[in-house]
Image 1: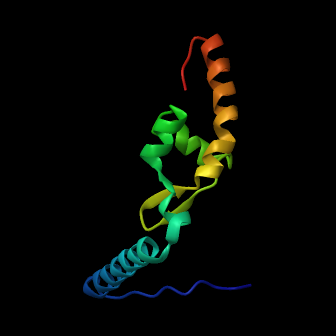
Image 2: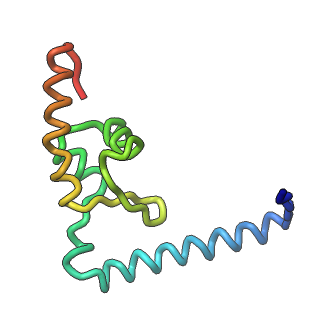
Length: 106
């Protein structure tokens, strides 16, 4: 059985590590933009996907949570491949029709 070892360090050290991690994430995002080519530049963010599917951010979260829509996180940002978004259009439209019959929206 493994035991958990607790490590403590000063707040200042933690803040330095967090700042370095933030700089690393920014650098990775920058490299993705510079060298990602056509494929990564076409990725969609949350706002674009909500607009395309005509859904709320909460519904988008549900699609991520239940595995319906694949996504990639870089830092605090979430991205989606356009092909993956297009695959769920029919599913979302079907759910929209079902909700309408019940007098609800998605």
